[in-house]
Image (tube, rainbow, N blue to C red; front, side, top):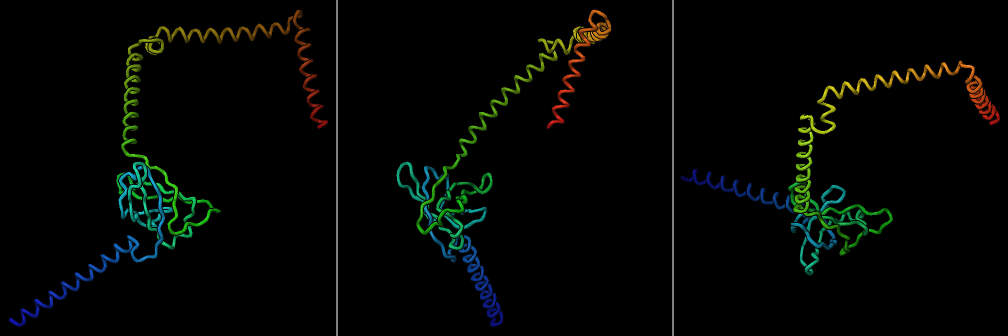
Length: 239
């Protein structure tokens, strides 16, 4: 009996010790994430709508978590004030002209505050400073815009389908051109006739050059072209 009781006490002691270790680790991890053990300073910003932001959500600067949301409270019917706890070691990077915007971790993730980078010449923020804000884009507005876009795409698709059906059925000018072989043959014959006419015109022009009635005109034209080429050549040499 005594041996069994001693084993039970040992197991109970191990269980309690393990629980305490896990509890301490959990406190340390949570405290590290929420900056409970790091020196911090506060910044403030105001929004018209915080869009689901909650106390304890992360604050991100340059893609890195640098703090947490400490408090959210309503000032009036159009202003919500957000107090942010920022790690002291990043204070040297956050300038007074930085802006606070509400974003999300991924497409459907938790809300967070994103602090944009400021100008190189701007002064550093101090404890209690106010940052300018950018209002978040509401998910409902995005979904409404996507719905309208999808409706427009559906209408355009239906119209294109109707046009293709008409073309395949030989309706309209384009449909007749594609479906009617007679029109296609006439177009081919017209192109052939144009080529023949062009060839005949070239032959007539060549014959006219050798005709004594037009020989002077073409010689004059040739000399003018040669003179122009010589003038251009002389001008280039002078340069």
